[in-house]
Amino acid sequence: MSQQRPDRIKQMLHYLWQHRHLSTQQAMELFGYAEATVRRDFQYIVNQYPGMIRGHGCLDFDDSTDDKEYVFDVKRTLQSVAKREIAALARTMIKDGDCFFLDSGSTCLELAKCLADARVKVICNDIKIANELGCFPHVESYIIGGLIRPGYFSVGESLALEMINAFSVERA
Image 1: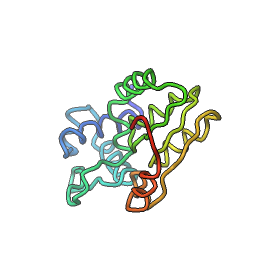
Image 2: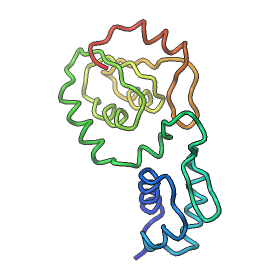
Image 3: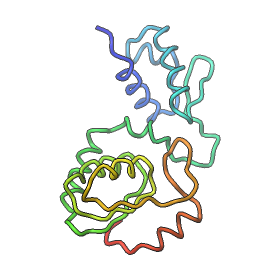
């Protein structure tokens, strides 16, 4: 039975995360995929994940930028079980009435998902986290304003820093 595209993409992204380069031949040998399947999946990855470059018979991370933070959707697919475990552990340390900052990132998004029953105040700089927190009636949530970083879903720049400094938090 052949793997579904999401599973194949996850395997390829995991390999790319570690090695920064994946050729068509490597994908065929490592994962047992047909050449046509690999080529279609490479094109899908380039279209869906900013920061990937399609070369002749390969995929690479785009290292031409000084920004080494990886695109959110790539990071989200990697080590997802470990991220959920970390989030569950972190949730045990959060008490009702706490006020804390959640940074941008896939592990912090997993923590946000664990706050459905919490009565807390959360300040964040991530659109996806703010969206998750907005579903919970007992979570008082704030999103920091500023420039939205395409592909990362986080907010930054000087306006964001000014807003962060306006809050007093117990945890970050």
